[in-house]
Amino acid sequence: MSSKDIYFIGICGTGVGALAGLLKAQGHHVRGSDVHSYPPMSDKLREWGIPVIEGHDAKNLDPQPDLVIIGNVVRATNPEAVAVRERNIPHMSMPQAIAEFGIGEKHS
Image 1 (cartoon, rainbow, N blue to C red):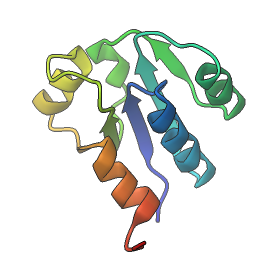
Image 2 (image 1 turned 135 degrees about the vertical axis):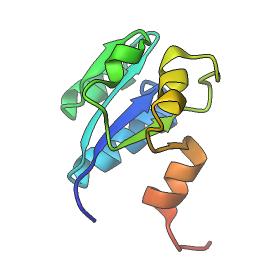
Image 3 (image 1 turned 90 degrees about the vertical axis):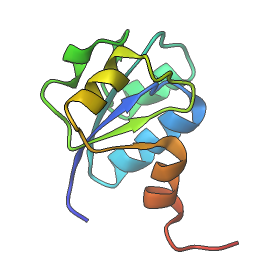
């Protein structure tokens, strides 16, 4: 798999942040935003070298990422989510991302 620039909306959630760390460890360039950034996830993201922007704004998507992963609590009216749709940036939900990058073809 080639390295991608992946942006997370709602990166400080426990599941979203953990997936961001996994993708960073796989060699992807990872960054993201959230309304607020609190420990312990803010500490882990910093430790993993993942930049976090506090607040949501369409300009945070510049330069345009290859893929945006949208956290479960992000509303459709979120300015970054709106910009993703308007700019036709490839995107997926958190469950889709887990299936794509975490679980793949594995079955329990």
